[in-house]
Length: 149
Image 1 (cartoon, rainbow, N blue to C red):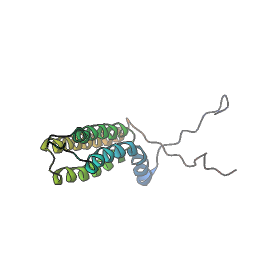
Image 2 (image 1 turned 180 degrees about the horizontal axis):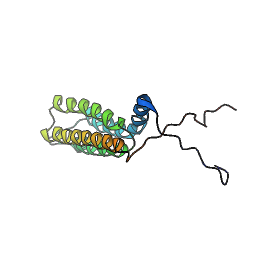
Image 3 (image 1 turned 90 degrees about the horizontal axis):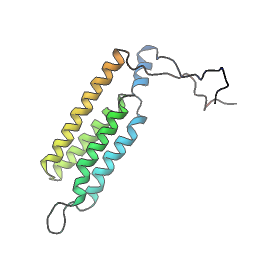
Image 4 (image 1 turned 120 degrees about the vertical axis):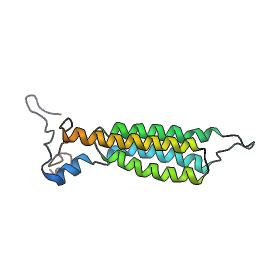
């Protein structure tokens, strides 16, 4: 907590290409999106995706629901970093390979491709936001929580 009349240091604008890249490509916001993608693709893979009578199981619906949810999380996180969409694209390519090898319905792959297109579009939007200075990342030289007493 700051004292009255004392401003909290919110960081500065990144200087140079190295700081710009690091400040705009923070991977931490990608964690929820990647976790949702992996859980919703891995769980149905580890369980039976068809019922005993050959009908589609409810777990099969977890895959497209997870792809949509995780893509939305990656896009939302993309408003502060370029990394979430890029990391999600790698995970989606993995999921797409699983979907195609598992012989799941073609519409599952179509949803992944739509999500990939949305993630690529968000990368473009975020690059535009950075270049037009609608978004300016911050750079903190010293982390006050790690400062030694």
